[in-house]
Image 1 (cartoon, rainbow, N blue to C red):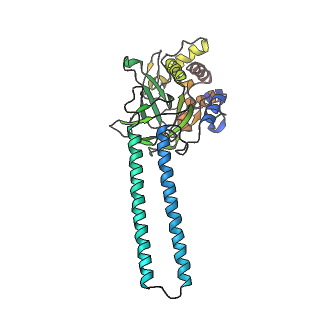
Image 2: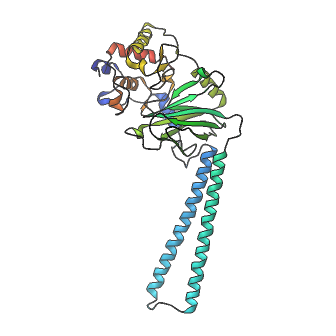
Length: 349
């Protein structure tokens, strides 16, 4: 790592500590509810949440009753010096055990029926709706590739990373695959978990009932940085979603200043162009995340860093120092080159 490049990053602090969060990213994180299946924001998560509470209260009642009967039996045993083995007592105990068995069986059958019903509802949700949106999500070690396919002109599909934008009150079909090991997508406020298995495509349908930012996470251990493989789902009003989608379909803007123009050449001349795509310039690699609109995203490194200039500088300079195991190699840039590159990347919004 070039020491001059590190000094040039104004927001990058000593010891590789992330810089202070930007106001925009801070607002986005404050908007996000608790990452929990008990705070549903869509019909799928609401069904799962409802099923969880049914099981919780059923198990809680069963547990309390068992403890109560155990305590009653213990107290009765201490009071009776001699065991009561009369015929009447035996009949009462047999009837009590039989009743408890029947109640247990009926309760278990009821829980099975409720579980199957919820599973059927969740599994068939949104399958026949014509307004369904389709998104392809690919797991990598350790980040998420997100594609919005275009059925009319496939070359015009939108590609982004670690951030899924969806319109509210619209079923969204996520087609899930992986480029390496098994991953598992879990957006608890919107749905349960679904695995990404090499060699196959799994599907899951999500829907958000209200605007918000909902955090997701890889829920299957996938290597060294498994815990740092997060993403966010941004649910918006349909009009705002269409605006976002229209903007994302645009290529990179033409540099307006000499610094930005030099930064574009730094990007093309450095190893960056060997792994990343920027639509509109001579960079079309697909090994790393698409950077066409990188500065419009709220985070870097799959949710590890807030997307501000200082963190971006540190990430470019030496990503493995921030996220050990990352396949993005360090970049040997001078302070001037790093500043020019940052100026160019700042235009990619």
